[in-house]
Image (cartoon, rainbow, N blue to C red; front, side, top):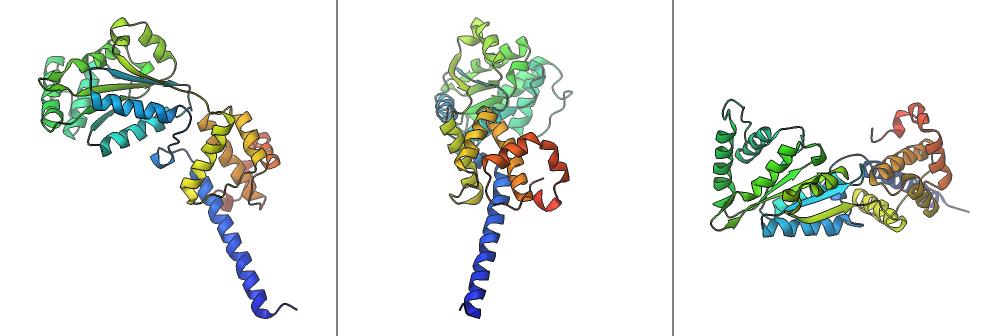
Length: 303
């Protein structure tokens, strides 16, 4: 017969297992939420080598530009965020242009604002001459004299006007007697590569070209394990191998879609009271995405 003490221990073990499973599932939901937490940066596939090449480009500062292209959802924003983090840790300055609808005059004013650490109104430097002069002074004070490097990270660069794109190229001509200090890095969809190829002046300045591709099946497995491991601090992955294989086919190796489908499947798994996603649960979450609206609030741990 099982004594009372043994029963209590077994009950406690079962409760601890249930708590551990719930904590793991909650961590996994956070792992696949859309965010720019660079702790989730996955260096596999083409992202890792591209990152290292861009860091070397900024450090060398040889009047060249970097360019990273990829289809939507392939990780350009995450790569840009990780590049910003790594460069900042290495003592470089980074200016990020997330609004690619700015004209070149607006870009200059934005760069001055970021370097000076305050929002500068258009009336303070009303024309291009005064803005360029202010930019040169800011670069001299914040970049050249301290002996730092400046990386200008441009998001959605395929949206830039031709004059703005050429203007960013011209920023590499701003230098000092001791060398060059500015490296623009363009991030954009594949259209960006075609536009750059059509402009001989800017294409001749491109030193690093990175193309973010979709993940292979083995890379998808590694990607899921990486994000779960970062979020949970462990090695347990609540997906069966066949579920991840199916996930790869459905998501076509696109990281953003992988995140979305994983989160849907995890919520479906919680709603069923299960602690591991198999291929049936995954397929059901894909076939019935509207069921999420009827899941109880206790299942929606990550919003």
